[in-house]
Length: 408
Ligand code: GAL
Figure 1: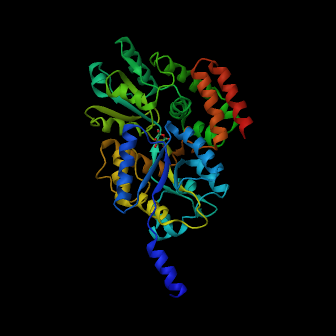
Figure 2: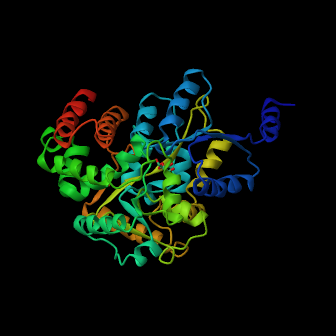
Figure 3: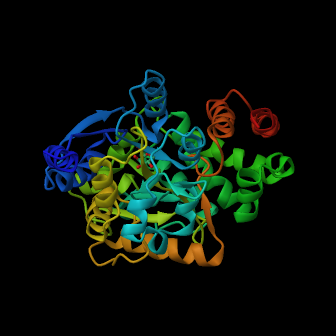
C-alpha cells in the first residue's frame, strides 16, 4: 500500500467523535432550545456529550471552563458571551474557523455587532447562535387585565402599575436576587433614566462623569423602587423561577432578557393571550443586546470534523429559525424570515434591525457585551450591594465611579 493509500484509508476510517459542549442552558426553555441543536447533530451522526453548568449569565460556566483549560482538558465547544470570547481569542486558545466561515459566507450575513465579538485578529473564533436583548418586560396578561392595567409606556406608568398591583395584594415584580439578574434590570433602568447617551457614556465609554452623574443616582433610586416591590423570598432565586411566578399569576411583571420567553412557551403559554412582552418603559427605540456564541477550542491547529459540523449547523438558516423560535432570541443572521416567529419574536427582529440602523443598538453591560469581565464584575458588585441596601443611591453612585476606575 502506498503512503497516499494508507492515509486515505485512515481518513475514511475516522469516525466522527462526540462533541463535548459546555453550556449553562439548564432551565426548561433553554433545554428545549438546546435539544434542537442536539437533534440536528444527531441527524448527522454526531453524538453529544453534555457538560451543563447551571447559572444564568454563565459566570459559573466560565469558572469551570478556566479549570478545564488549566488542566489541559478543554471541551470541544463552549457557550460564551461577548468580551469573554475576545479574552479567549487573545489567549490563543481558540480554533480558527475562517475556512468554515468562508465556505458558509458568514461575513455577508452575520450582523456587524456580532462579528465584533466573533472574530479576533481577523479570524472567526466563534459561531453566533442568536441575538438576545435585556430591555424587555414580561407580564401576566390576566393579572394586568384584572387590575385594569395597560402596558406601561413610561417610568411613571410603570410606577402606577406597580402601585396598583401592590394595593391589590399581588407581588408586582418577580425577581431573583442574584448579581447578574440585578445587573440585567440595571441595563434597562439606566437606559430608561438617562437615555442612550447615559448608557453609552457610562457603560461603553466608562466616562467617570456619566458614572457619577445625577442621572445615575436617579437610576439607583429607581432600582430602590424595584427592590421595594419584589417579594420577601427574592434573594438567590433563579431567574426561571421568577419567570414561573409571572406564568402562574403569582406576580405581575418580570424584567428579564428574552430567554424568559422560552419559559413561557415551554409552559404552553401564548404571547398576546397569556403573557405580554414589551420593551422596558422608556426604552422603546433601544436594544441592549447579548449574543450567545459557541467558541471552538483549538485541537492541535486543526478544526475537527465535529467542530466544523457544529459551527456549520449553528449558522444554517433553518437552524437559526428553529432554535431561536424556541429560545426566545432572534437569529444571528440578517437573512432569516420572521415567518415562524411569534409576535414577540417578530417584534424582536424588527427592533433589532431598527436599532442597528438608528444607532440605538448597544451591548448589554450585564451580559458581557459592554466591557471585559473585570469591569462588568465591578459594576455588578456595586449594583448588588445597593439593591440589598448596603449603599444608598448617592453612595452607590460614588462607588460605581471608584469600582470602574479600579477595574481598568
Ligand atoms: C444569558 C444567555 C441566555 C440565557 C441567560 C440565562 O447570558 O445569553 O442565553 O441563557 O443567560 O441563563
